Image (tube, helix red, strand yellow):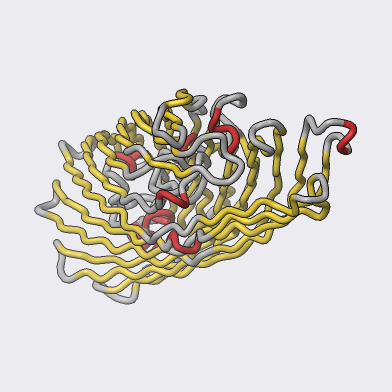
Length: 424
């Protein structure tokens, strides 16, 4: 588990009473990008995980800031929520030579981690709401043995991400509501691999802040049927990093330290959802999220000083395709205080054979989840269990790799989530 940012946000309101809400958090990300396809994360609350991520129309849930900002108009009064989702990923690989003969096999070094979420929403009047969320939209960690054949491609990769999203929402009438928000996005990137045919370990490490935005709208056809649309902008980070190469013989200049420069583009996405209430106790959500992963067309890093005077940088074509995530969630109230939830999600694979690597060595995913919730007038407690069945991925070797092709397999992740909300 890797902790990557400590932050505290205080929101002060002076009206009929004095309220200070502190969002103190230590954020960490799950390994082997076990959330959504690519390196996306959508485990933003225990209830959201329980419903497979189809959580765009929840009643009185502060985590709507993450799933659908237009739905914070469903929060009554004032609410503060904290959530933590534990993800434990597992997977194996086999590497092959040019004849198809296996030359190495192994498994990922498990980095079980937490995907936390922190949310605050306040209803100002019958028409206006404000809120702030702090959660992770993107992140991943993958690690393999440093002396393995695949270490020539990547033996440690980490993308830490955090999004701070101040949000304003307005309810125009009984049918329409909409929201707009800013996003302050943090990225910390670390890449480690062996170069010169697995003989020289290297590390590239840097961080960046950038701005994005989001917008959302809901429309209720009647008391039982509602649709919603959410757009999140892409966020482009221009990063200055430190590059280190170790173990170069002294006769060739010894260890090499220099500055590196590159870009990390987090893709924009569209989410559309449909909510149907069978009655006051049971509802179902359908959700589709389209993510423009084609923004990840290359991972190019240039060095201020070339390695041995002949290697000016690291250049790798990715050419990922755009992809869909589909989710289905069901929520049923057993009583005034207890609710059960279930969900299923499917993520398309977006990574091509010649653009695959051991930074993100996984394919399509299927998520199965089940959760329950206790709620009264002042508080809500939810817990969930989930299982992610993750397809393998075929990976083409490139110049400098010590294998011709490789295949990840037997990939899966176990998920446990807990959320607590307090209403004021």
